[in-house]
Image (cartoon, one colour):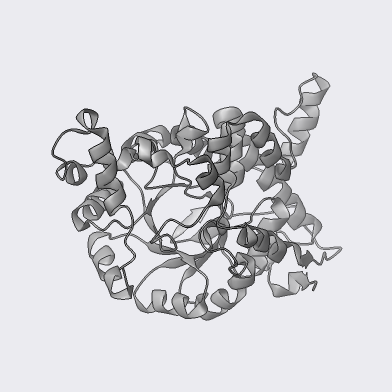
Length: 387
């Protein structure tokens, strides 16, 4: 993708013709703009967290307590942002993380976000709870890198079918979300009584699945309520335990990454179970109120399994310096969530591309201005903790 930092000169040159960026280049301003422009239900669904929002705030505080310590007079004229993750070479240490129900913020939904990721050379992780069937998203991406996130259903045949479909559609890695065996107490959604799934939104993968449809007495279009109830009854399973991972390994021959790991012992159990990676994540603060900030959990997990597994990170990434901090703490790449959802809601595919380009330009510049030319040079010595 060339020098990601060059994006700033493109913006300045466009300014000579009177063209200004359509969205803020400080990505932390997107949430307030989305709050103005999106309907309260959809905005609250994206922005909201569990309980009083303490964990979402802890995610930001954990990153903000870290300060970068720049080094001088190092040759940073040529930089290489590429990283090896799950046996693939990525052009930058970034993927778009799984965000469900994107049609609530923009009609082009997952297709637009996936096309943006493909255009910018970063992987796209499709949510099980997407508004668009996985095959249609794959088609929109061409041969670009795509990964599939599984909400592990109670129904084994539906899970098996999802895995087969994802494989056939060219998704190369499986991300299994562990932190949502139940939907958390989310006051912003509760206050609006807003849960899109109950209207059959975010259920596209299920409503197009042969194994799911086999469990219905009538086609979805003839009895939507029955289909929704069938979905709700199987969506999550609080009874799953570590031995159940064997079923996934039997039915998926690519890399398997467990998303939602926060304790080093769980990371070790993942490695012992033959998994390929973990995502240190607390679901952006959406599941357990009062939990540890994700960046506070990252170092211990990286120390425990960094030599055995790919360690990825999400929950709280908003800026290019956040990306640098996560890599310095031991992550090999980060997943981005809410900011790209806001970009999508504000300006469709172009909005998502804006978010990716700004984030990576800022990361590239921050890396260089801190005295580094590639992600592998970062480590705990690149940071200072401020109480």
